[in-house]
Image: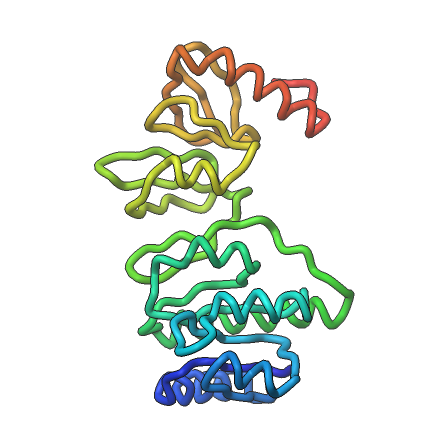
Length: 239
């Protein structure tokens, strides 16, 4: 497995290299101080740890260029810039770590990346389940869309009610709605529900497998319409 590290800070490169060699000793590790240097090398990575803010070509532009050459490259951003977390979706990032990254979190992400790589090596392209990245406490965590039952907003925090527990973070429900897609519906200004978990509903309330969500009466007709479309897409007869 060939792992590249691209960061303009030597101290960061050394830290990342040490951790990669600790948790993945069989890997070939190559470090680069800039995007231009990496491109000039003419080599391709199986896994790339990439900074965003670098002199000259930034990490996002480098990622776009590399993605065109190798679609199945596993890309992990390691950066001090939290605000680019959503742009990472555009270049199909596997994960987004914010500096300084705890060793335990780094090891967890690296292990997941190696599993992904092994799947690619054994049977061709692996289609990972759709997910979003949620930033809490300076760390971006991968949340699979299929695990989200519904979301609500309270005191400027978005609360994700998931099949394996709840998670909360500072954000806007409208931004979350844009990320999640057509299987989710905004029933109320404070609630966003996931169609697969709907058990029953009326003009004021949506009852889900875990919890309930308010229904704004003005949204009810469109909710019914979209829920029927969802069932048609999934080949369901409705509930």
